[in-house]
Image (tube, rainbow, N blue to C red; front, side, top):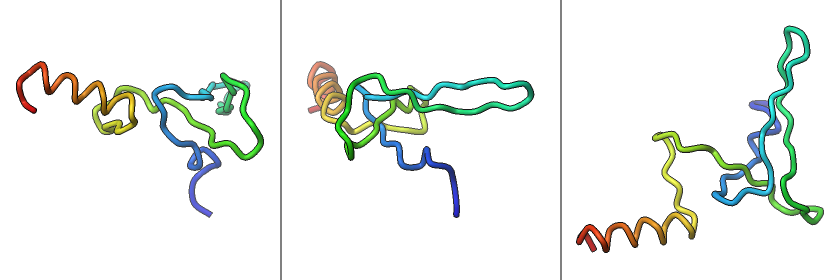
Length: 75
């Protein structure tokens, strides 16, 4: 067994969940809090953040990148 249950969370710029840290004495627990109602079996998504190690290729970000490229004269 490798990793925690969070390995099943996918990225989305408009997520339906968020990670919440809960301090309990010296221990820290990470909870998954749903932001939107979801059906049973639906994919749980979180926003990975704006770190440079990850390039989002979702439809929303792809459209934004394409628009930026057009404005910069790259495309």
